[in-house]
Length: 329
Image (cartoon, rainbow, N blue to C red; front, side):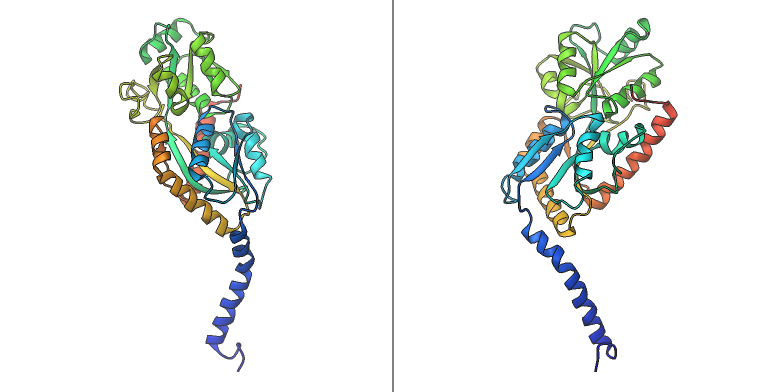
């Protein structure tokens, strides 16, 4: 009797064939990682992507059996570093901290984008979410959002706000607020968050829109004055600072998100090992403490849900950019 003649034998043959096809992938997963992990941060040192990446990398420690090398590759709203990962298709040793700027805003804001934010990546896990915060120089006679609007109304086209770069979430939130308030602000893009904060603290520019984790140290140190946050509810680490929405601008609501992604085409078994490792790191006391101190909520979305979030954010920002006729400076 042949396999063709017997249903049981046919099923067994199919299963054996599937196992044979899966064997190389499983073998590669068992051998992985074979060399150090290259972890790309697509923004400069000191920003939210850098802070979260290094906290996670430290929590992972030596559990993978190879060192993790965190490499900052900033530029073009996070697109420079993202392209590095996109071009590493099939290489399970190249990963990154994907984010709203590089995978939600940039791909629909810039005319030329060197990667597909979904097809060129294996999105594995949402890492964390948090608001942006509008801060001003502490010597500026501005203590509320109403004060800030009045300042801008009295000096149209003269009040500047800084951000960590064109095409970032903080750039776009500033544009949303400007249009909602009917005021004219001047956006000043910097090469990362650190120089933007330095210039606000020093009085070179009066204000900036910044990610809460990045700004928190200077806020606590009294070097920056926060006047509004971007989420629907107040930040737990800044309970006395109102949101844009409760200050009279209900359309200015946005959440920063960061996730863990690898290059497209990696073995499914390796992606699953990454998912388990990242989920364990996010549940660790070290990460919970680090994230909580800077106002970051650890993410819970796995591969399918995080990929769906990326798609939905692309749709959302495409409409925002189109409706507001927003362009990069």
